[in-house]
Length: 288
Image (cartoon, rainbow, N blue to C red):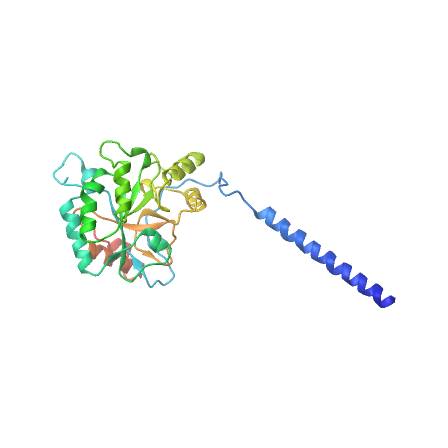
């Protein structure tokens, strides 16, 4: 009887100890759990940083994927009254020449989702077009199809159908042509200083019927923006920070190379790869 009693006592102690551990585990979980979009009220709002040595990945990379950033595809270089418009414009002839050079150099286009899913090769590149201008459909698409290239188009959803912007049927045609369509907010909102609820609303609304990729308008965002984008299940987001994407890059802060009318793309790509490898200083970038 004494042995049976000892076994009963030992069993009760084991059961009691297990309940204590379960209670502690759930207590830790409940105390550390946070809402998906908990606003960081004490977080300082910041403008997007300029990429320098400290923002280049310190871990050695083996893949370097250039993400090219275009805006207008139009003949605009004779417009002396609009210097910003000139900086944002690449002529159809120049785009054709640039894609031809990249094709001859062995580059192959992939989508942002491909990159996020690890589907890339040593000579992969990503072409992006911001804002949803109508010349993306009328001028860029035929050139992309000529070289059998794909591209990612970031659409400001509230601008659809306006003068100078694409229509919904044109966006659908881009998708049918194999292009990737991403979000770019509803009103081209500055996400670096937007109210929290407004930022969520604009990002999520612009992602309806879109692929799971996003571009920060004017490259402006803050740490809370990154949390929102991640929480919405977006797979990849691009900035205007200079550089090339690697397997160690943050999928929500992917850098790009801005393309202008006179950009020597192969030279710029090689420079950014050299900077990522720490073979070149950011101050040695070409100015075009």
